[in-house]
Image (cartoon, rainbow, N blue to C red; front, side, top):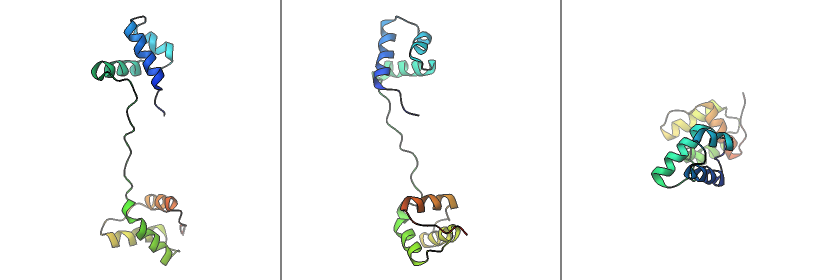
Length: 117
């Protein structure tokens, strides 16, 4: 879900500051939830800002440091199954093997083929 536009946020704050409408009516007027209006107003009062916060970034890839290892393993033996590849990478990195879907996603991201059986 995308963040509400800065323009919409500014208009909500302007209406609240003008005391023209109560917050529930402002929410209905702009077709947003009451909790959005309340949280926006509280943040504006505390910080003076109404812009959307930056994205948190998400989780880091588990195999981000093993890209070259995966590429070389697939180049040496292209018919490795996901389980075999995961075990091979785990043995070389001294880490537990990753789940098969994690390995599959990494192969897709790297543009490498995968053995299905």
